[in-house]
Image 1 (spheres, rainbow, N blue to C red):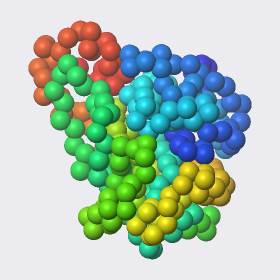
Image 2 (image 1 turned 30 degrees about the vertical axis):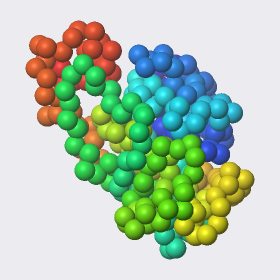
Image 3 (image 1 turned 90 degrees about the vertical axis):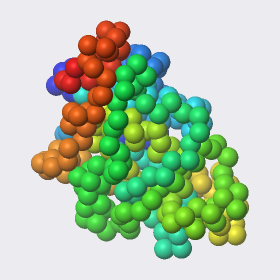
Image 4 (image 1 turned 90 degrees about the horizontal axis):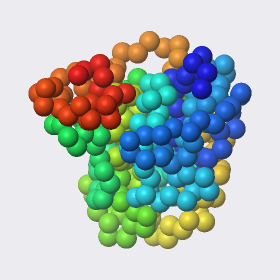
Length: 287
């Protein structure tokens, strides 16, 4: 890859967001990682003249279920390409009457209900990462401003409950999540968000609302979801096109790129050299 094209902003596309139609001068980059191959080759190109990247979370043809996505490989691959900010696009169901299908929702909290996914890069060292606020405020604010500038219905702030999937919820589960105060429900925010934090990358989410989940006395079907995703795709692309200049031109105030500064508990002399090499793109400035 041409060094002048090192992307600083990347988009991880979810259900229905698989073709980076906004890119100019696009090229495909294959990246090897210690965690295996990412879901798909990374598309690198320009949006409004700014170098960006795109990765299809579920792979070509949407072959990977939420539980099968290689989240570690995806985040690691983007990190090695020079990405500093990730915009995660994800289809969600609404748990609130006021969050309607076809709205765009920008969560600021996550409740993790996943069960079987590797959720850290660090297996040979002890690292305690702060995760009180799982999304980058600067990035989320930029996404909200982009939507507001375009007159798109964007709702900011609330809780995304991440379930294991790939099945949808029972009515009992859906109503329980409502009682617990959650706002939207999806299957891919975790461990994507914590891995981005461990990799010291800013992360914001565009959650595209497709349905009211089953609490609303209607069945959630993949046909409904895909139809609403298609309707949301245009607004999602418009926000992406608008937010890119904002992300490049606005000074960062967040501390995402300093996450690991005081989080590595293991004595540096006790970290295996193989682990240091394996995680070099992530920990090199700290060890």
